[in-house]
Length: 439
Image (cartoon, rainbow, N blue to C red):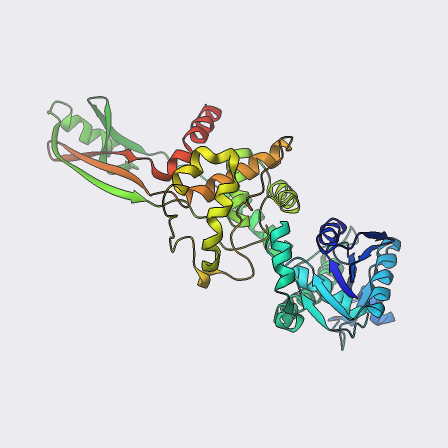
């Protein structure tokens, strides 16, 4: 029997359906030579200070720093967690092979490895490494299982990060609390939270201490076009007034006009951060809201793995692009123009050197259900349009710079005209709606 361990019950259920493990048991599925079970995220964690020494039960500066001779794991103190851990341990004893089906990333690897380590697993381990939850991706992943040892360095990185967090958090929190909290609470220090808090505080202080400075500009209107003085901003009003008085009775003369065409490439595909920024700007979603909706889309098989830090796709994915586009029926008005000719392959989209664990966030080609939750539909739409646009021609624009002169004082005006919409055709309606909201 092969034991597959997913990161959550919903993923375990999908895997069980695909591999034919149809018999539901308490905490796992069974059938067709497979046992399918799951964690609930972290089942295990690093031991707390007082698990190592009675001296470390007290928050006392005399016992700092706390550095265990060897870091150890424990099962999280929760009845449901303990029950599921014991189920997994029992299944490990029954199986002949373990398949790690955790999320394909550093945290997913850490969650699974801690469980295997705490349960003292001795069975060989394979790794399911997939970037989407579609049936096709899961089947392909099972056809190409990796050796678990191939991801030892990934686990080592996650484990080292957790130990570093423990050393800093446990020691620094006690140090600052004992020295500065005056018994009023705990001053929590963390690798991420403390620098982030410092950024927020520094930015707040900058805003509070900001002192606005008055400045003046010289502008003139010619044929309904505003021209700005090339001297830009004047910190002293008299300097601007002096120039104005010297030129106001002189004629404005156009001295040059230059036009230059330029190509604007499609916007990069989304990684998690850029999608969170876009959702905040366009939909007013918080970063947490965006991730929550994105995770739901991933579990619904509509988009690829969400927690990614690259905007590129691997080159071996190019042959799959046509099939994804063909299945995006709600966007047929845009995809047909791409499918009618060879699909564009750009180094700005496909680059193996820019790929780490996962590729950019893209649609899987699964058609969204009609009764989709509106926020999820909005997030999906942003991802879908950005993906389709990546294969459209560049947008061609004409940039114009006009220079005018008044008695030796130069003024300029710039303008841009879209000659060929190219990829921008996917966003014209959205941009119009955004401008209307701003009004």
